[in-house]
Length: 276
Image 1 (cartoon, rainbow, N blue to C red):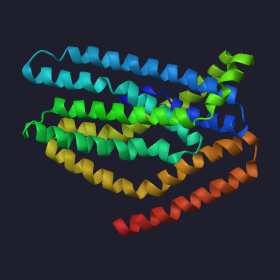
Image 2 (image 1 turned 120 degrees about the vertical axis):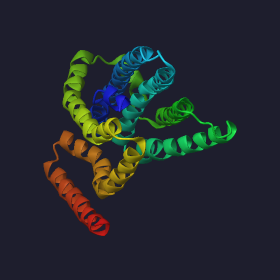
Image 3 (image 1 turned 180 degrees about the horizontal axis):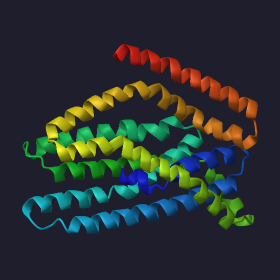
């Protein structure tokens, strides 16, 4: 949650602007945006991690509090990496590398966490504690974010703008202001989305026991299968929307929106009927 929020909405801003820069072959602007947003996001995420560590330090009073503080400190180290992964996903999605954008977080990370927890459980004779699981999550996050970043660096087209950036003069301040202004609504939406996505789980975890919270979490995630067609269609068409909007292709944009609405609606209704 903190990693997504610490991305400051830049993951969507990068998707919006990078699609237009790629369509117009403005590689210098793309290279500048990637550098600027990475520095901004990593700086903000590092600050969030430091504040989380400082907050966790005050929990180091009793035995239970010490364990909780240790877990929070380990998890805090994940925040900059998760924020960077969000930004990487936006860059990859703008290039329409959907596997690179979504598979590391949606497939690689869960597999690494399950594998790591299994190895840890066997190696410590079934006495796994929350801090052990936190270390597994940290190492798994480091692995998939590093793999995603390296793969993105090898394939990305913004590297072709490096020489042009040195040779041409660009209004960097003006571009940066445009990126930050565009990220503000995306940031607000990200915060609200996280609140809606996890608010009920957190509230139930405070008011109820772990068993009931876990059962509710499993059922609520199963219900989210209804939105799967919409998520897939939005992920595929988002860079196309941005490209046609940048190029002023209104008719093509409208036709793609209509196509996306149809591909989202009917499969969603079908899944809802089956689940009901």
